[in-house]
Amino acid sequence: MLESSPEQQATAEYVKINSSSLDVQMINSYKSLKPFRENEARAKLLELNDGSKWIFKDEQDAHSAILSIGASSSLFESAAYKLSILFGLVRVPETRLAAIVIDGKVVVGSMQRFASNGLSVFEFDRYAFFSPQRKRRFQKQLVLMQIFDYIIANIDRSSDNYLIAKNGDVIPIDHGISLRVSDLHRIDFNKNVNFDDKIKKIFRQRENQIYLEHLKGINADLLFEIPELSLQQVDLIMARIAHVIDLVGDS
Ligand SMILES: Nc1ncnc2c1ncn2[C@@H]1O[C@H](COP(=O)(O)OP(=O)(O)O)[C@@H](O)[C@H]1O
Ligand SMILES: [Mg+2]
Image 1: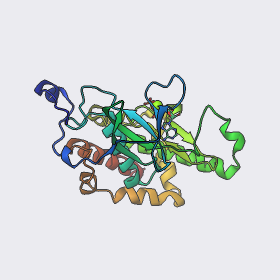
Image 2: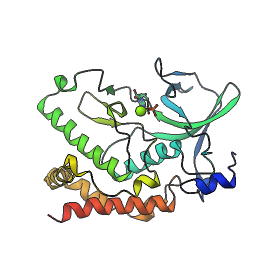
Image 3: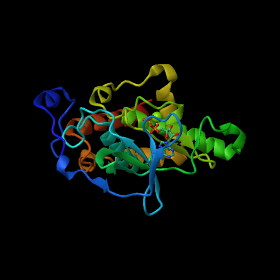
């Protein structure tokens, strides 16, 4: 287990209290591990012995020893996946913490199921493919993804951080810069992009009310079940959910 010095612990955004409950997948042998594509610094395509394919990313911040301090991109990736299941707004591909043996050395990071049906925004003119229904589905999911991003304070949703399936589904990836306590504190919506209006509009549509009902059912106890999250993060996430619910409530 990696140890952190007291200084590191003091400067970290928070210290994990309960890290022993983290579920880290140990991978001693696998079929292949190679850069996902040329010039890709971190993301590697990992093929396991069972044939399943994953994107593996090593832990970004060398100081945030994943097993002792919570401020770690891998923890954020894994927590974002679990939160996406709880919230039901968007579907993040299955993500796990992983420790993989590379050249005899253990490398810690996150692994996410490779979305073989996902195309990058740059790979095709997305609208050319879409029937009006698919286009609506796509647009709706983009807004739901923004709401998800708001709740987890994801500040890194650029066009290379989501994929698009041909049926119009949005596939959110790359949550390594989300859930940071400093960002979770910033609760205001960005008024410039009329985000409030978008949220209200989508939740007021009858077919989408289920999403709001679902969010209303989230409580701190459910979030405490996610060992990747600190108490502070749980509090702040709950405040952000409350903010979304309030926003739709008053008009
Ligand atoms: N689950 C996934 N399925 C398919 N492609 C992925 C997946 N995760 C990442 N990628 C591809 O790898 C690239 C880099 O991954 P990303 O998670 O964005 O890492 P980084 O933190 O380096 O930006 C993405 O832009 C995407 O093209
Ligand atoms: Mg990225």
